[in-house]
Length: 164
Image 1 (cartoon, helix red, strand yellow):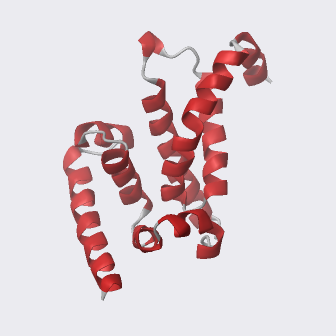
Image 2: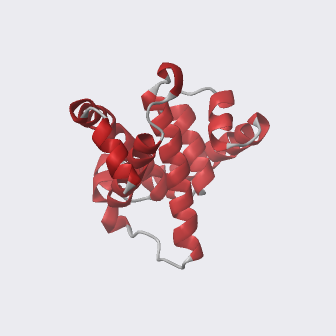
C-alpha cells in the first residue's frame, strides 16, 4: 500500500514517459538472461516498482543505468529462484521472437550460465566498462573478466560448430 501512495506523489505523466522510454530495451536485455520475453517483462515491472520505491534517485543519477543494473540483478534472482523451485527451463518455442532474430546466437547464449549472460549484456550489449559491470554484479573485475573470456571462447566454439 505504501508503494501505491508513494507512486501517487510522482508525476504520473513523467513516470509513464520514463517507463515507455526504457521498457523495450530492458525487456530485450533481460530476456537474454532469463530466456523468455514474457518473464523479462515481469522482471521489468519489478524493476520499475523498485524505482518508485527509491524515488527520487540521488543527484540526477542515470535512470537507464540504474534500471539496467536493478533489472539484471532481479533477472539473475529470477533464474536462481526458478532453478531452486524446480521449474522447467523455457523451451525454444517459447522464445520465438529471439529465434527469429538470430537462432544460432540464441542457442549459443543458452549454453552460458546466468551470470555470464548478464556480464555479456552489460559489457557487450550495453557498453559498460568491465569495472562498471563488475560493480553492478557485485564481483571483482578479474572475476568478470574471466567470465567474459570463457563466454567468448564458448560462444566462438558453439557458433563455429553450428557453421559446419
